[in-house]
Image (cartoon, rainbow, N blue to C red; front, side, top):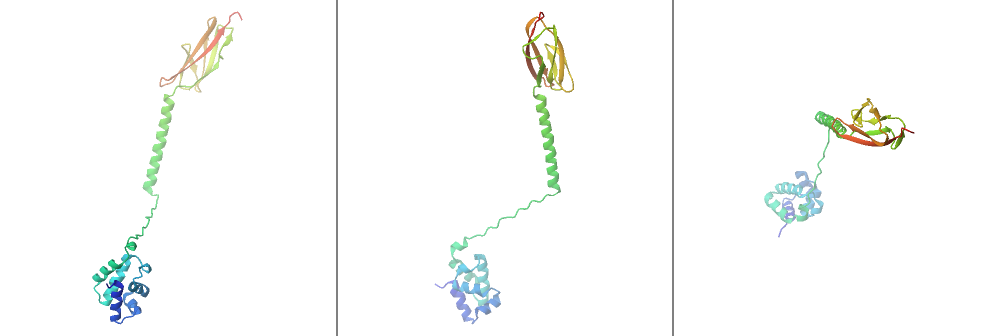
Length: 209
């Protein structure tokens, strides 16, 4: 059975055309025309390109190009038809006014959200309470003592249910009365969100000491 290469070559010889003349008429390189006639598919471009070559060559030689393409499809190696060149899309990132504005708004929102979250955590957590005096199990010889410590600046402090004065830095001080013998001094710091921190110090009042 005659192949596409034989058909085109015989038609060229009948018309007494050289490959050089065919190249000049079709503007297809003689190397490719020769490869088509020899059916050397490995020397040719992809199938769609070869199909265009065959159509032009067939028209030059007076061959029905539909018949020529049909023969080409029959003779062309199937595995070469499956080869598809994929071109990776090129992505470009450009910073424009919209993206700059969106980034700025996102940043501001994130800052505000972070600040509000910090304020919420600070508002809802119990206040700090550090007792400076008296030390635990202290022995005193006066019927009253001055107690002191440090708490959160906005906290309310009570010592034995007696209010203590808190300054802007959270330092507090109070004078309390003692009863004779061992006893406990109760400290309580209460935040604006009603969170409470408690501490206890044990003291001994020795009036005969």
